[in-house]
Amino acid sequence: MAPDETQEFTITLSSEGNPKIYHNRTYGYIGIRDRSEKEPKHQRINSVTFPKDTNPYNYIYPHGAVMENDMIGFRIYCDHRQSIDLYGHRHRKMDIAETGFYTTPLQRLQGYGEDVLYTGSTYGCGALHGWDGKNAIMFENVRNTTETIVCQGPVRTIVDVTNKAWQPKSDSSPVDIVTRYILYYGHRDVEVQVKFSRPVPDLQLSTGIVDIVEGSEEFTDKAGLRGDWGRACAGNNPQVYDTITVGLGIYVPPLYYKGDSHYTDGKPRLPNQAYVQVIGTNTDSLHYWFTATSHIESFGFSNKDAWFQWLKEWKEELEKPILIK
Image 1 (cartoon, rainbow, N blue to C red):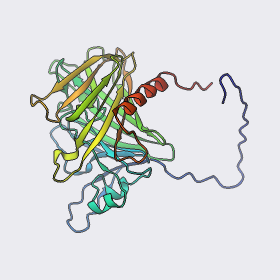
Image 2: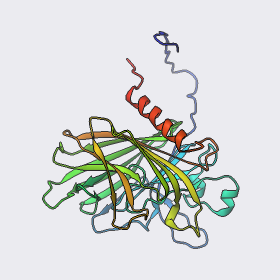
Image 3: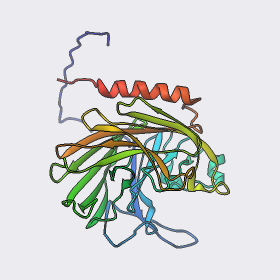
Image 4: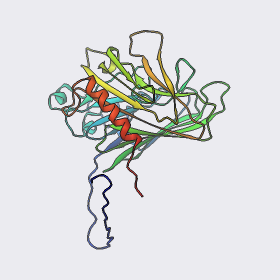
C-alpha cells in the first residue's frame, strides 16, 4: 500500500463447504528422554514441572523446550539457567523434528541445520535473569519451574516458562514469573512477554546475549539495542562441533531499559561472559525481543556490518508497529 492509502475489505462468513487446511509453519516440542541405546523413542509431552531440588537437564529431551520456524530455532534449557540456545538453518525448512537439535554428520551433508552456539553460564540469546549489580542471578531459589508448549501452528509457536516463588536474594519477597516466548512464522526474532504475580519495582532484572569468544565484536546504541558477531562452537568442543560465525541481537524498549553492562564468571575469554541489558519495571509486566543468525544460512548475512545494520532496521520496525483499528 502507498503512504496514506486507504483500502476497504469485506469479510463474508459462511457455514457452507469445508474449512481450509493450514499446515503448521512453526514447531514446538518438549519430551521425556528415552535412554534406549538402539532406537530411543523420546515421549512427547506438552508440559513438565520440576521442584527446586531437582535437576531435570538429563531427563528432558532435548534438555529443554524447543521452538522453530523455517528460518531459526531455539532451545530453552530446563535447568536453573534457562538459557536460550540457537539452532541455525542451512536452508529455509524446519528440521529439528528430525535432528532433535543433535544433527549427525550425514544430516549435515544432506543440508540440515545444527546447534551453533555455546551458552555457557549466561543468557545465551535473550534469557531473563535477575541482576545483583555485577552478575546475573538465575533460578536456583524457586519452589518449582514449569516449561509448557502452549501451541504450535501455521502462525506461531508459544513456549511458557513459569517460575514459582522466585527469591533472587534472601531478603526478596517471593514472586511468580511467567516468561512467554513467541516465535512467528517468517520471523527470525522472538517476542518475550513477562508477567509477574505482583508489581516488581524492587527487583533488579537483566537479559542479554553471550559474549561470543572468538573474534567477538559488539554493537550497542546505548538505548536498548545490542548485538554481537563472532565465531562460536556449540558444546565448547571443537572436536565434535564446527566453529561457526554467529550474530546475536536483543532489543529492550525504553520503558524497561536501564543500561548496558557486562559480566564474566571470573574466567576471562571463556564463553561464560555476556553483554548485559539491565532492565526493570514498576508494574507486573515487561516486554522485549531477541534475534539471531549464523553464517551457515543460505539466506543470511555476509558480515557483521550487514548484521548490525539489520539490527538497527529491526529496532525501528519494532518501535513503529503497524496500527490496526
